Image 1 (cartoon, rainbow, N blue to C red):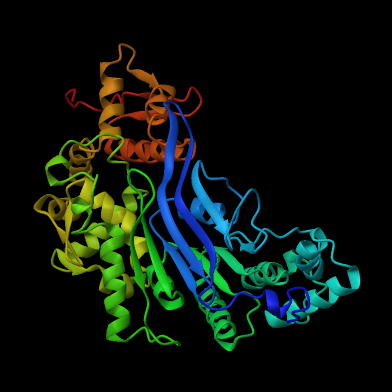
Image 2: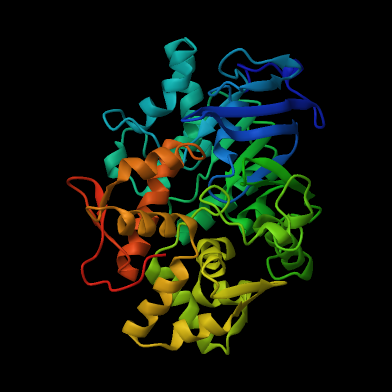
Length: 451
């Protein structure tokens, strides 16, 4: 790719600090004022490295990426590019999104040219640089094609070409492979790493947002794990001292995945972190400190049944591998089983409790009864069930619960929590929900005592 737009004398040398955050905090408006999403983030990104931001949903990793790109302003602290605090969009970064974000009425070449056009690059130079980027990323022959004519993998290649054509110092990638099928993602990921290693990659650093532990270990030189409760903080940073290309079957690779997994899930270390709830506080669950995991009843039931078939205990990594999943894909179901008291995690093993074993082996009606009793241990489910039972009309508008949740969650998180609570409560026959009046109601078929 051409380098004329970025003179060699201006190119950062390996090790130079390109991006830096100091005490970065980001909050959004909530019912009680500001709700923290990120707090106290100190991070550096240096030339010559790939940094992966890893964490569960809600850990703020995408918000952090947008702060680094200057698309979102921090509420407190600073974000600097090459020593200069940002006052707007970061001129040294370009973004690749999860959802391609292509303009359907433009051809591949026109989509790739957009960034150069915005920088007022002359048409002839713009076309030359665009064709170089298209060639680099393997899109030769598709210059005049429209997005609707391309596969998902080819559309994402257009996204990469559009970002790389402006030759950013830092390429920002927000889960760029998650919308692709497994084989396409693996192929594109491999090609990008080959380009990175070849020295032909027209960028000096990469910041990758992912929830995929194996992807982070495969690609990154440094993995920054973000914790999600009660707001996004850096839980731990791992230096990845593994030679490329990396061998997934090596003991070192698997050991690092295990260590990152334990940190990401908070097992063993979470209760010792300053300011976090200790073991003595676990029983005092509230809607704020015990949000419902993004796991459906079918999903958590299926996981419980599989573990029961394996004797009630199994290694999570082995289970995920057997099922063709990433370990982190099963984390919401694991969290749900733990919240319900159906399972515990010991080291890297998922172990069914006596109650969980009974749930997994029971017939449909008995399993629903067991689930109903356990679901009432989830604070939001209990709150809704108690509310409708104590209401004179046997109904309560969801606005009441939205207002309560808004003190602790963003509007998007409020929607997610209520959707999950509705799913669990309906299955357990604890309450029903009418979408038109947007209200919960006591299920007439339920003869359960008030909680």
